[in-house]
Image (spheres, rainbow, N blue to C red):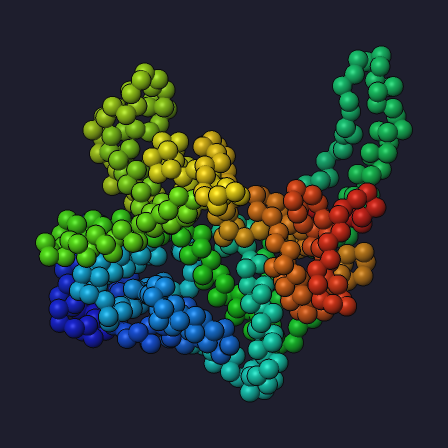
Length: 509
């Protein structure tokens, strides 16, 4: 029996032992889970720290605690559980929960713990993060003693404004250019308009062909002198290597970057992770641990978890329903080219080869996919119609939500754009010596999400202070290319449309 589990009251300890045994029987596998029951105030304190008992000192933790306390006090919601990706996993239970709620939460936690241990995107995360955050706190306190609280806290503010500028896939994909790469060194062929042989000299004059070759040669020469040699998606790493930072600033920026990478897989798998945990708490509770007297309380709690109003987004609901849909389809063989080729009315719905591969399939999906690949591969037109996952817009006259589009391809494209890159615009460093003046130029890679000018101004201001030189952002705003610059006088963001006279960065996306 796990050491810290004895801290549970006897009744909850008995439920925990039985729920854990049944979860293992179903095939779930997890690091040991340490449950602790916390009172209202302590739960909010730990939640404000992101689930960790100790974090580096900063005002945002107090602000978050105040927000959570007021939310609970005014009945706007409360925390039922928290679970931390760690070895062992730590899970916190709210002491005011009913026994029914505690059983549901424990079953839910075991689903999360299994996902943390086996999902590919968590495989590179720090498994002793409890110790790491405590170490980070000690290091920051040491810097505060030497540099002063205001100085360190102000720098942490800048780092936190930039913490999302990482490359979530860099743990698995090498981004930096390889020395000696022949990319871009192949023979250049000018763009030619289609024309008959006898008309080609007039349609594609030699002067124009030579102009294209010269422009290409200049671009290649500029790229060779460019710094960085290829776009740097991990902006924090680029700043660590090249910004004029003191050693204590490098240490602080480095630890915030480490924590950003620890939390990144949770953003990349929010739908799957919550869906997997909801799937297992539903199965364990309804089939094994729900007493007759608890049905109403359980139904009320579960319905609150999976409720999704029209036009809303609930990762619990979407995730659990997609896992159930995958299980049903693979149990009946409703997948693959043979099934997709059926065209008789009702043939696809009636098809059932009794293959019963659903449980095996969802375990495989849980292991390999993240939210983007999960939605891309398993979202179907039938699923969208069944759950009314349409594109909604609010009627300007009545204020009511109305369906704007039922087109599956559009719905899927918009959905994927919202969850790609953790739901944030993708920005990369493309030129660290823009206009040969040491200016930093970043570029926005438009994949469906536009730049919010207000938020961009805050990020550019923080970058300006860290980099020590002016900063520009090549962005797409309302489908038009623009360069956003932080005005030195008032600190506001100035937006200039790109035109033929605008100097181009060494790399553009």
